[in-house]
Length: 180
Image 1: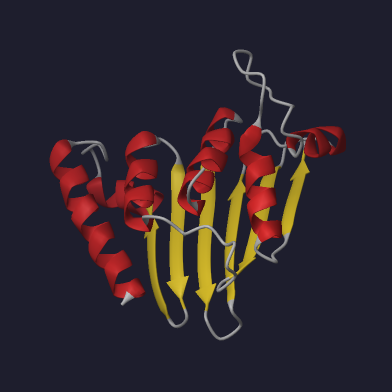
Image 2: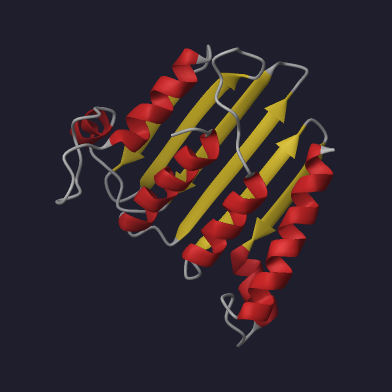
């Protein structure tokens, strides 16, 4: 995976396969402390202690058509290569929390990637999931909550072409404001 946003999408796909109906993604860049942190929390099936250990092994997967489960193990490796930390906390029946930190200016830190595109793809791909997406750089932030968005839209689906077009522009503008 070339950038961190691809890791994020893979982990959120795992959450949806674990039947999460609500997922929180929090991306924070703190230039003062020289840290990038990624937190992903879901309310999916969760894992027991043995599964938590297995999920961090690249040669373990729950997918029947694959022999490898690289998503979590590659995120862990990427964070550790960039002088960061990784934590996977889960309880069977209560969801999962993945936290990864990176030294922001570390030479081995992968690029963050296109966060606007990542947010848009997640919303378009998982319209039935409540996604709370947050991106913060120092004191600037952009948040989008699809549960609130669906309330505002009432009977209009979030995947309606005109809604997706408006969302794409809104997200791009919000992320651009954070990154300026």
